[in-house]
Length: 231
Image (tube, rainbow, N blue to C red; front, top):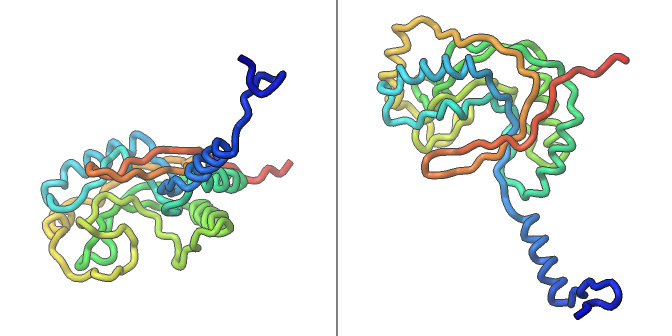
């Protein structure tokens, strides 16, 4: 039997078209949790893994980040429909910033040592990292993402107090606690940790998926770091 006349293509009736439109619209409304970050070199990751393994027993009640998930966050976007991924990918591809050299060393606590909620490793970089963070913030703001109110504070989160946010600045509910006290006493007896230096030559758009075992991060797109050509 031949459908749809000489073409052999069956016609789509009104109900079929409506169903297709509903499916397409539903796909656009699927929500994904997004952020933009730099990955770290394997050698640095391994040194941090050893550092963290030696400290977990001094703060057993906090949530330690899986070492394969360590990254330098440039911008947390949050939950967006899937069609936003295409828009932000195109916009991020226009960023031109030179590769960034980063030295990883030291540690600290957010918001303060006495009211510790986050344990982090420090990083030190030239002005390119700040330029990159500002460029990413500007691009995402043009797509309706809330612009950052405070200066960029680069760090690597190693552990968080259970139920605590990762934000550097004081949050509602922050106050003196002893969750990290034993860890802080242990760290005070150790030399400042040095994890190494790397050159970041690309940054990434990540999807974050929450699960009972912790967040799982998937790279959706990479973007090369390169300065504007003088040619």
